[in-house]
Structure formats: structure tokens, C-alpha cells
Length: 291
Image (cartoon, rainbow, N blue to C red; front, top):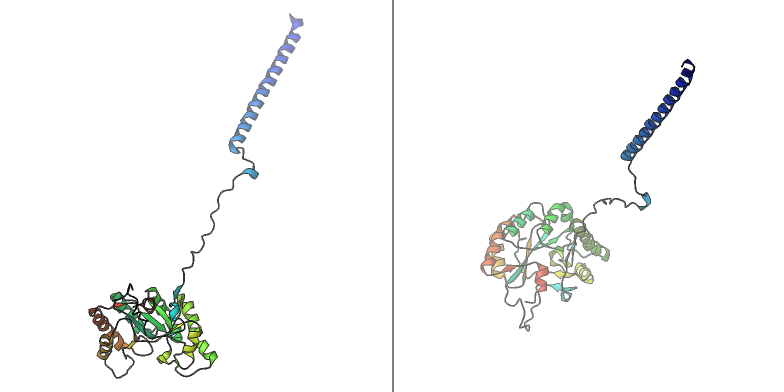
């Protein structure tokens, strides 16, 4: 028995070593499998970047489309013409507008700091649209009031830069009209074919140039005489209410001086015309009608 002990011990030693190696292999295998599984969980397979659909990137918002500019145009038959009132087609029996009592209120020499907003309030209260002929210098001084006039739906005309009556050379004439047109557009986005010469003077070069540009030289059929420094405002009312006829263009002023009397007269002018059955239109609307 003693002679076999070394062999037995050696045998059991080999078994122990083998067992250790097997156990180690299993442990290492389990560890490696666990690590692989962890890696798979932490970093899942990604698709080939070359075939990957790129996420949609929101583009910066673009500015909204520019609002169309207002263009106060006139019919072809009035372009390059002097207009006191619209042409009446007495032979047109099927005219849509026949019998309508329409009248156009116009205001010159603004926009004016105090008077124009007061007139706008009166027009709004009565749901009336009018036509304003602007002087460039007044527009330059009151751009926000000008924007209000346009925003409230009134028509705009050119009344030169300086409101001069004198005769001018060609370069000055062009500057008086074009400089004002440019500022009207820059301030309000309005382009207009309506021109009114200061004082109604037709022989100082302004009207001729305006006609050459296919503008209508818009005069008036009836004046309130509100520039008369001695007249009371009741006179303005009488002039307009008693002198009105269908298709007339009425001259008044919102600028160029103290127009307090015009503001006082305007509500009664409007009510007097309404009592006679008149409806109020802008000059461009009036010129579109064959009365």
C-alpha cells in the first residue's frame, strides 16, 4: 500500500489540475459572453451611414411674401388728361351706375399733424373713403399720419413737393413731382396716377409733365372755399351741400395751415349730402364709373 501512495497522489493531483482548468475555461467563457452581451446592449448595431436617411432639418422661417403695393390707377381715357369730373355717357342706356348720386371728397396739402387725424376720425365715423393729395414736405414731416391714411383705405394723389405756383424749368418740375412720388412710395408703398397742381395752376409746367407720365390731372368740380381766411365754416357747408351734383369732385383742405374750420364743417357737409341721397367714393372709383 505504501508503494502506491505516490501514484495515487499524482493521479488526484492531475484530476485537480484538470478540474481547475475546466472551471477556469468555463468561467472565462461566461465572462467573455457576458462582456459581449453588455457591448451589444450598450452599442447596438447602427445602419450604414451612407444609406441612412438624414433627419429633416427645419429651415429658418422665411419672411412672409411682400404685400402687393397699392396702385391708384385711372382708366385709359383719363390718362394724360385734365379732369374736373367724370365723363357722362348720355347714350349708354344700360349703364350700371346710371342714376347713382355719387360724390368724391378730396383733401389737399397734408398730411397735417393735428387736422388730418381729426378728419380721419370723422370719415371713419361716417364710413366714408376720401382722396388725399399730399405735399412732399408735409409727408416728410408726418410719415406716421400718412401711413394711417393709407391703412384706413383712402386714395392718395401727388400734390408736388413745395406747393409752388410759379413757373418752373423742366428739371424743377420733374423734381417737384418725382421726389414726392418717390417719398409716397417709400413711406406707404403707394403708387398713384392722380396728380393735382397747387392752386389749380395749369400753365407752370407741372400739369404738362404730369400728363406726359400718363397721370390724370385731377381738378375739382366744386370747392368748399375753406382757404378763405375770412369765411365762417358755415359758408363751407353751404358751398358744398347746395352746390353738389352727381359725379362732382369736392375740394377741401386738411393741411397747409389752420384747418380748424374745415374740421368743424365736415360733419355737417357729410350729413347734408347724405340727406340728399349721396354716396361717397374715392376719385379712382369715381373715374371708373360712367355716370
